[in-house]
Amino acid sequence: MISSTEYEPVIGLEVHAQMLTESKAFCGCSSRFGSEPNTNVCPVCLGMPGTLPVLNRALVEFILRMGLAVDCTIAPRSVFARKNYFYPDLPKGYQISQYEEPVCADGRVEIEIDESTRKSIRVKRIHMEEDAGKSIHDQGPDTLVDVNRCGVPLIEIVTEPDISSAREAYLYLQRVRQLVTYLGICDGNMEEGSLRCDANVSVRKRGAARLGTKTEVKNMNSFRNVERALEFEIHRQIALLEDGGRVTQETLLWDAGAGVAIPMRSKEEAHDYRYFPDPDLVSVVVDDAWLAAVRASLPELPHVRRDRFVELCSLPRYDADVLTSEKGTADYFEAALAALQGLSRSDPGENAKAVSNWVMTDVLRVLSERKASIAQFPVQPARLAAMIGLIQKGTISGKIAKEVFEEMLTSAEGPLAIVERKGLVQVSDEGAIEATIDTMLARNARQVEQYRAGNEKIFGFFVGETMKLTKGKANPRVVNELLRRKLSARKV
Ligand SMILES: [Zn+2]
Image 1 (cartoon, rainbow, N blue to C red):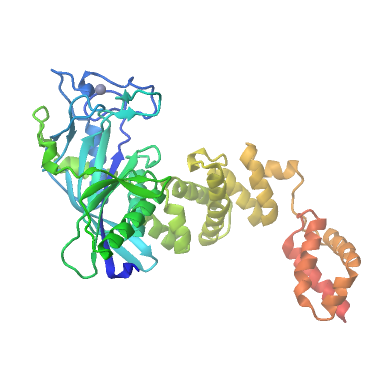
Image 2: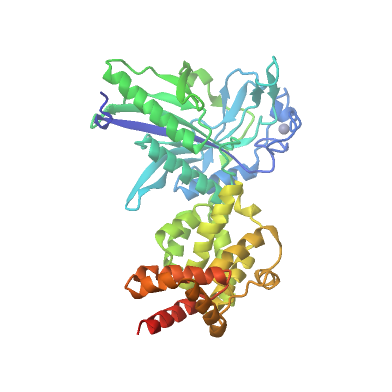
């Protein structure tokens, strides 16, 4: 019987993030994903003799953004090193990386385990490096090589072993993804490999000072898989130790289909890579002026924006968290709110809550159904705001608004045009509603008797029947008032 509470997992993560620069790290080739194989290449990224790499300034700016966002110390001078190994998808025989002197060190990323528990995960270092090419094994008997990815710029974010569960690893990764997308330096797409995560995992008896032997887990290409793979590996190590066995230092590949991590090769020692300073590249010098300019260009970071939404818009914290989880969603919300403020006499807090409700329920529901991003959402913020404005004015009911919203998804019309074309204007005229109520009550004499006999719970039934007869167009407030008046009048 495994008592997992006796053990404490110790996890460190290495995240590779592909930078959204136009060109590669050391040459002018495009770094775009999804081009025809072997078309974005030149003698520099192929490492032909006699060529010289030239550092892409945008890569340095991007890593500085990340370093500043997670409170790293920025080295005024850092160097590139060669990481030597032989592999078919690496024609140069080495990757340019940073080893002993990275640009960024000693930062922290804060995660929220629940509403009241925050934890700071220390970032040991962030460095720049270039990617290797790609071997393709699944197109016929031969292995094919695509070297488009050679030289594509990456940053690697390495944590201290501060993560204590698979859940925390998941939260950390979510936070990193949120940061890189807010900073506009990476698209954060794990499935396409623009964000990749490797983990060092060990377990030890709770309270023990010494770290256990660690394994490295690779090939976890989604957030969910990171959590599953780490759960698997933590339980495997605990079971092994409980059986009197020992953990072997090795690299494991996560097999998502089978739900297991399979040993890949015994762990290479760092010196196997024979790191040495790259003689073709000068040191990277970041002076105060450059650093100040990058700092000034940083966007509002997600947690700051979240707090602003809570304070300025009086939004519940939950809403603010959901709305700021993606930068695009937060931008959309703010644009819709600004548009509504221009139309509406309601107070800003009320407007914010109204927009927030529509974004959180209807907009995000449609995006998740369509597996689309907010950038692809067909209803622009101003159109959504105009529709909410119609509800506030009493032109349409909240129920009818759902119908208008669905219509806007497929039509470019404004909400008012849709309401007029489909005859959806809310009926508030008491005479018309009263006539409908009379018809409805006459049809449901039995229920009226029950109500009169004291079963007040069926009031909602009368409201529902009236709304049905008016095809949802009656003003619910007027319906409620008239019904109460009529039913109590008949009681006497
Ligand atoms: Zn090139």
